[in-house]
Image (cartoon, rainbow, N blue to C red; front, top):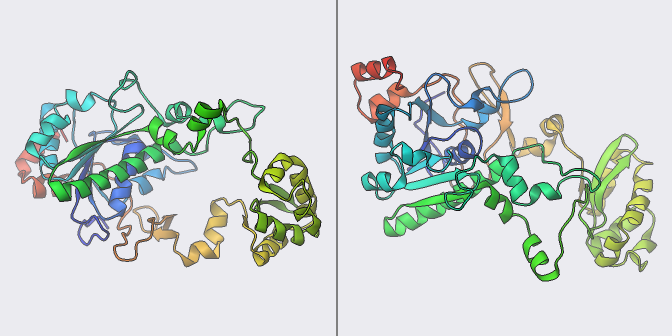
Length: 400
């Protein structure tokens, strides 16, 4: 299960050394490993990445996903011998990934200026809350803070309550995704020039990047977007509606689609009514229009509303939770969720690798290894050529 050979994907010729922990760095490493890169994750000896014990429910299972396809070693980066081990690994790699507070790598003698002297083509991926420069760069930064500073938190939730948050660490995932995108672009540049470079991906700017037109709207019109709950202002109908046995999402805000919806609910005249005949008019009269639709949906089951919407070509869908995803035939047909063997479960279900690639699709070869330092001998002995005696000495001195 832990054989690193036979990797598939577009990055099988790339080696990445992952030094970060928790979410933002490791998710970037997961994306790379999913695409076939040889990702060697370095953890502190004796404790490992805190993600090993994170998760909800009876068992901590997040690690099985975020560490999948990675080889894991241990090294004490606070000690010169541990730093030298990692420096030797980086010398034989294409990328190094870290998400420590800015300045930490430099204090360990692992800054880009030093590493690039031993590996001029090195791509260094740096993920942090505020970025590597600027007055806030040295601050501790978590996803929730970056989501707030980037503007997302203010817009989440109901308008009559304090700002809410998504039920996921979306800021970390966004920063990791932008870091991965930057690293792949840097690979393209290196292929042309031979030059390595630093990727500086901050959480707050990754959130800011997806904030649509909030900045220019304020700069030009002094308009500040506000929380709007389950709807988007001036986009109607696009809401969650009550049915006899549950809730259902309908998004029919385009003129032609709204005309089809009006016919389905037995109110074709709504499409010609000046209060609802245009995108702007429907947005202005959103509450009244949602009330009309809700009166219709609550007399029918979710199954019935779903069938009618699909038959008419109206974008609509159920609000899924994990059990709904596992039962859905579309998920099954696309293998969106796969069964993976682990040491504890013969068929642990988890999300597959996305996006799909027609020529170089990656694959999940194994889940996160539960044994700390599982590949120490394989990496330090096989890749770096250390002897059994040297490895024993490193263990005895708590370096690995």
